[in-house]
Image 1 (tube, rainbow, N blue to C red):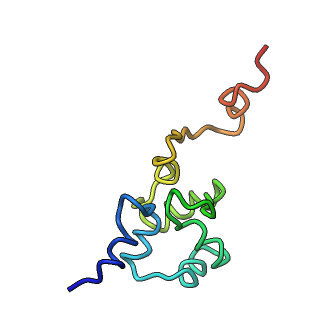
Image 2 (cartoon, rainbow, N blue to C red):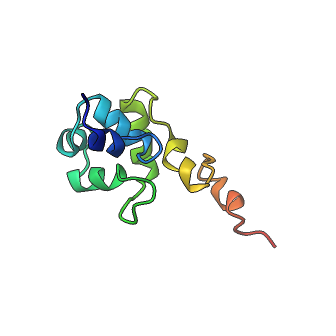
Amino acid sequence: MPDPVALAAHSPLQRIKFDRWMFDHGLDNIACAELLGAHPMSVGRWRKPYDDPARRIPHADMIHKITLISAGQVQPEDWYRACGVRYVPVSPSEAPAALGVGRP
């Protein structure tokens, strides 16, 4: 019988999709960090539950790399969905307008 504590720790309501993807592929922080060229501590912070104050969101280039390595199973919007923030990709030239910078 599966351990209920382990199942709760990986509940889709509590954990982010990146953490679930790592769990499904048998990756720990060190193995995933090696795949991504990141520090294991960073990976550990990225996979924390949405409501954990120590949770961090990777930079855009790392989010892109994670999307590629996960074959699209982890998408950019997955990092923001539970926060109530909508991810809208823009090119660098569109960023000022998207942020409302430079408007009178």
